[in-house]
Image (cartoon, rainbow, N blue to C red; front, side, top):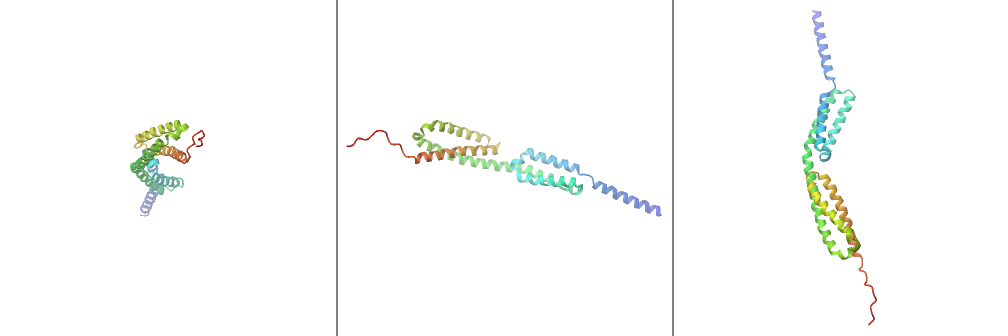
Length: 198
């Protein structure tokens, strides 16, 4: 009877030891799964269009890595599962983020196009005063015109690049706005030659 008890006790201890050993294995499968989800999110464009979601997922990943180093495998397993879910959420948020970026770029484009029309009209009024700046204006006007055409082409596929180019065009246009304001303030030069006294 005593041997039976000892055998049962040995089996229970062995089962506990095996289950404890099973729990203490590093969660490599969960880690690889989370890593793949991270790579998928990044390749989908989460760094540009779902930045906040991606950063939150990366923090969970770092927590899991830290737990792995401390051999807290049970906690690390859960953290890797949470990180995987967060990376998947970031990947899913890319489309909405890209649509928002496209909408912002289109709005900016409309504003720049309006400014361009006004600037062009001002340039026509100031044509006589342009004189030595006329060639520079023509070159910049062509650059702005061509830049707007390029932005329209890339706005749907690369809204962040389109927005950056719009900012450059706006800077160039602002410089000319200021130039035209200064020209408008400058007094007209007096005609040479003396007037005869009556």
